Amino acid sequence: MRDTVYKNVSRNADVADVVARDTWVEIRRIELAPDQRAPQVPADTRRVPLEMRVKGFLAAPVCLGAQAEIITPAGRRLRGVLSEVNPAYSHGFGSPIPELSTIGSEVRAILREQGRFK
Image (cartoon, rainbow, N blue to C red; front, side, top):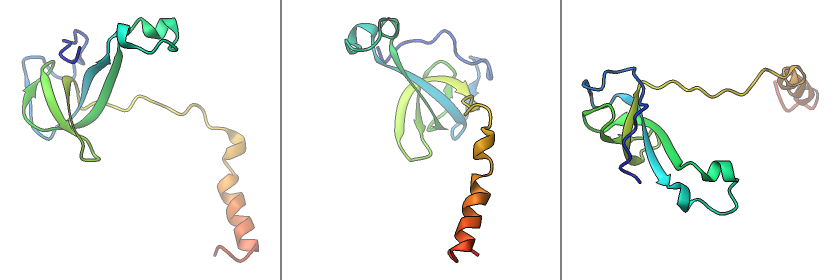
């Protein structure tokens, strides 16, 4: 399953373009086929493969959609299909929680009272 060809790669770069070494990219790799998923995984999840997506720096020039090796910021070397060039982080942490917005200043005030913070 690790040699899966991805049809839906990002179009931030043309498929025919060679992406330069050291470019920030994302690779994908199928880790488990649907029939290899654990039995306790919910049925709707078990119907799809377990896919790894990792961002890092391209180790050698390669075309979008081809096998690539990256070096992660932690120094790990991983291989997969080059799926995106200059990927953005798309996760979020939701809306701010008003009750938590003052905690930092409240803790500093308490520590100042105790003489543990200047």
